[in-house]
Amino acid sequence: MNALVVRRRLAAIFAHRRRAIARLLPQLRRTDTPLRVAVAGGSGFVGGAIVRELHSRGERVVVLSSRPASAAGHLPDDVETRHADVADPDSLASALEGVDALVISLAFPNSPMEPPRLGHAFEQVDAAGTERLVAAAMAAGVRRIACISGAGAAPYSTRPWFRAKWRAETAVKGSGIAYTIVRPTWLYGPDDVALNRSLGFAKWLPSVPLTGSGRRPLAPVSVDDVAGLVADALRADDARDQLFEIGGPDVLTMRDVVRTALRVAGLRRPLLPAPAALLKLAAWPLRLLPRPPLTPDAVDFVNQPATVDSAPLLARMPRRLTPLAEGLGTYLR
Ligand SMILES: NC(=O)c1ccc[n+]([C@@H]2O[C@H](COP(=O)([O-])OP(=O)(O)OC[C@H]3O[C@@H](n4cnc5c(N)ncnc54)[C@H](OP(=O)(O)O)[C@@H]3O)[C@@H](O)[C@H]2O)c1
View (cartoon, rainbow, N blue to C red):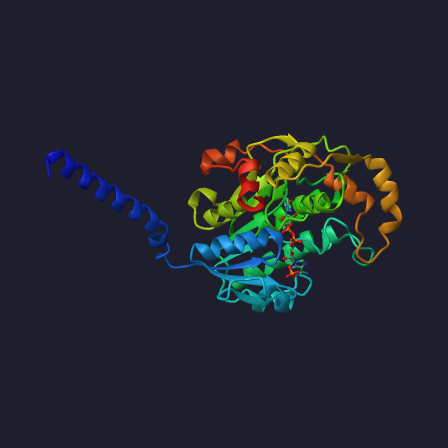
């Protein structure tokens, strides 16, 4: 064997070792003492992705749920579930026992369609529910909070959902607990409701209906990118007491988002935009149903623009944000 061959073989062996070490690094990091992280909303779309991410990093995850029996069926076996109803402060105190960090990812059932029985559900669940959770976290000695808010949260917005998110953020900021608030734009992922509904229509109908003109600008962000940010934020000093807006790298219209999803899923269907005013009129009587499929307010909710400036986040917590087609390709192909 000549010297060149020996050198090549040695180089190959070292390259192989380097790759093996790189693969092991995340597991080595897990030898840090795992955090016991409670995820309120861990049975939901966004919270569920956060649960999976934290679990894959070796954290000890506890899902807080108002219906723990049905939530447990969808979770890894070693994820604990505890009963916690944000309408019931007593349940929150016991649910947060021994918890190091709390993730808040709350939305009322069937959001954004406020049910008539629970009018002002944004205020009752997203806002007051977060306030109660934060108060319980303070009493329980929780050391870190990450809260999922929404792009556009503002105190005097005409939209009730933005005012509710502002109230939730205010509670988190005023808690004295180290916090990270995350304001995502419009999220997509294997378990989302919105885009999956459009794809469901595409399977059964000759065209895909759109709520409104579909021309609003969106920067869709992968739910896994948000989950990764939350998992990082619970441990990173750079994320302490920070509010981050996060959107995906592509700014598109809703039409383009649905077209991209159809293309990635291998479907060809024309889009059928429905005028927002007409939809609101049609939704007016539906709002009285116990679980309305659409309400006039929800038409406004889904038609709002959703873009943000992710540059401050990327400067402080550098990361790659997944392009839409790539993110969709991970579960639609
Ligand atoms: N989806 C998006 O595109 C998007 C975009 C920006 C921001 N966000 C924000 O992300 C957060 C999560 O949204 P999502 O889409 O994941 O909603 P989701 O799938 O409907 O999940 C909502 C979660 O809230 C929990 N919850 C509801 N009422 C509760 C109560 N009384 N007590 C305890 N938990 C309760 C539910 O848990 P149980 O039913 O198990 O109790 C559920 O896990 C929301 O704050 C939303 O505003 C979402």
